[in-house]
Image 1 (cartoon, one colour):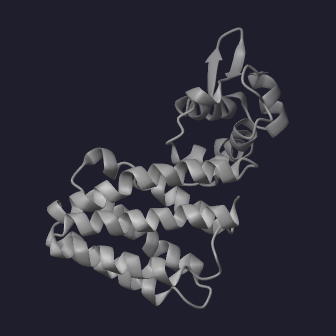
Image 2 (cartoon, rainbow, N blue to C red):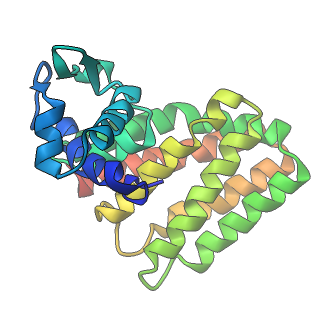
Image 3 (tube, rainbow, N blue to C red):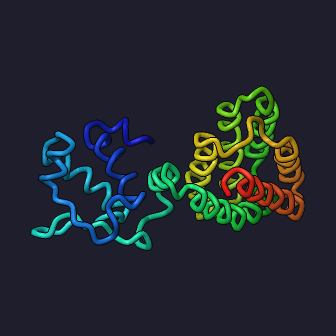
Length: 233
């Protein structure tokens, strides 16, 4: 959920969050709540609420009589979808995309193999429906529509794995896919071979072929890394 939908403190976060993740305020910088409230023309209570959100992401630490201190990036909750979104909006986008795609390549093939063993009939049907939706929107520069089916496909894979840790990465993968689309780190139409691979993964999961599901998903993630070499070197 975008912070822009959460009132005044959301408006503050939409500016301050990206500034912190982009390094406008380096680690160790001290921000004063009163000065921030004046800058954003909001009350101190609104500013405190915004700071609490940033603290929950481990971007800052607030101490009485000291102020709000920006924490080193090593302490940030880099799995928080909002932090991912802010980082992808900054100059460090290529490195962030690569880091997240490497994470996907480590997790999703294993998840697909597990899904082939554990997916329910309903999950198999949902996966096939997502793959067909990707096929239907893969031509004609319909990336926003394609994205909806692509995100849903990968969520089903992670959930159907039966591993709750993998399932929780659904939001992370969704932010990666959304970031690639919104920041135009995609070809105008998806790679036809990648679309076909998604269909084949759905088939392998439905057939209970764990080795094939894992191998095909690995091909998808390798292809995503190769696209980054071209589009976000």
